[in-house]
Length: 279
Image (cartoon, rainbow, N blue to C red):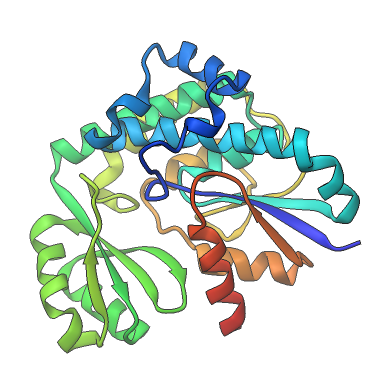
């Protein structure tokens, strides 16, 4: 029986109307009650609303898959691991039973608010470096005081840091690294030290949240290995890179043969193909 892993997307996979297939789903409706507002009405306002909206869609997608297609899927393969890209870690931990849904909704809401506030406190940005030489991209980042915030797949690194340095990296990308630069539509320097105010708020929220042993290994972005300290690693995840390429390779090395993306879009499916084909 082939082994499968569940994958959950992060911010950037959101889209207007993504909630329509799940309107009326018990988990989505429960989440809206807990939030006390409808984030889908305010997606254009950025991180503060995009993150809880995407989380609710992803968990509803998982629950629907489990109910509607799960029996057939589980008869064809064994679910042995899960992972989420940045925000998607919370969906993965719910699916694995490590976080209760209600607790995860509250955590995601606080995370989104904390990251949005941190972005206003210290203006920052992110730029994707597509193609080019990975070593040269790393050298450019260090020279400009930027963080390699996402190692998504071969030929796809994301830099994060102060706005001026991000702008300079975008200008120098082609000549210095051979990469094509694409600015990301975010309001902060996510997965960099500039998120420390957000990480501190998240630590407080996590300390008050029950955490259980996951039923299956959930791979952490910060280590590209199964979580060993969920509270600590979730908070650190705001400050440290998303090691997604390494995570996929680690799951493949652990015997995962099939990846199932649950949530809006197919971004992660594309990263799986690029990473594993290159390997």
